[in-house]
Amino acid sequence: MTAVLSVRRADITRVAVDAIVNAANSSLLGGGGVDGAIHRAAGPGLLEECAALRGCPTGQARITGGHRLPARHVIHAVGPVWHGGDQGEAEALAGCYTAAVVLAQEHGCRSVAFPSISTGIFGYPQDQAAAIAVHAVRRALATAPDVESVVFCVFSDEDLAIYRGILSH
Image (cartoon, rainbow, N blue to C red):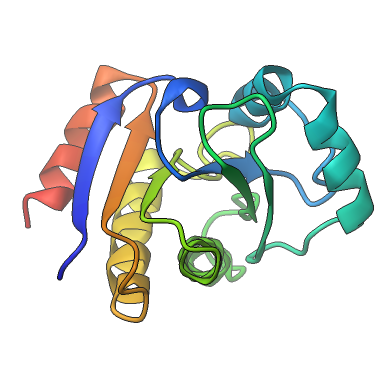
């Protein structure tokens, strides 16, 4: 069975899936944007669990419980800061999406919601980041048969249009 990929303009902290992905920084201790919203919605238990993980390198991911979120798990994926595109950013971004799908499979998650990793304060251009995200997730799903659905949760109508265009191919 092939996983269904979709895009939705939604608050990722309210999406009813098995795992939501957090666009985390390498400390895993919260921040702004999606990261801060997830930490606020999940409550203090998430911060405690993240502190015990002692960080995560760029291009990788770690998993925790969902705490007060509707999702059972939070997968913390650390994307790269954009430096113009010639410092391995694409590989690191693809790596964190791949690592998130692997963790979802390992933890029995049938449904996963992703934000647009690295596109906020990390400055990655949204159109390039979305193309990398969709390609990396599609490739990773080939070895994640238990993951049945992936939703890309976006913030703006512009982001929605970008993902719709990519997913239609």
